[in-house]
Amino acid sequence: MKKTDLILNLSNNSDLSKVDSKAAVEVILQELTNAIVSGEGVEIRGFGGFYKKHRKARLGINPKTSERTQVSEKFVPFFKPGKLLKEMVNKV
Image (tube, rainbow, N blue to C red):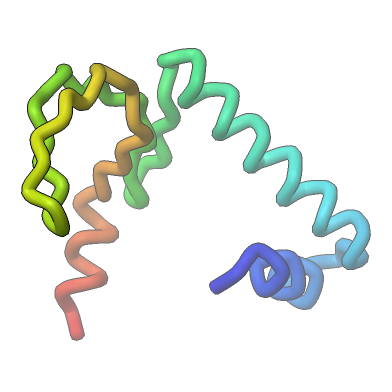
C-alpha cells in the first residue's frame, strides 16, 4: 500500500474529503517522524512501536570488491511489531 492508497482508503471509509484525508495522513506521518527523531518513539497498542536504534561503528566489507571499510556509528529507525499484529500475520 502506498501513501496515496492510504489517503483514498481514509477518504472512502470516513466523512473526510480527499484533501482533508491527505492533510490528516501528512500530519500523522510528520508527528510519527518527529517522535522517532527526538528519541521519544511511538507505541501503538496491538500494532507495534517505532523507535530510534543506535548502531555501533563496525568494519564493513564491500561484497563486490572484498574491500574492508569502516562504517561509522549511526541511528536507524526500527519497528517492533506488537503481539496482535504478529498473531494476525501468522493466521494465514
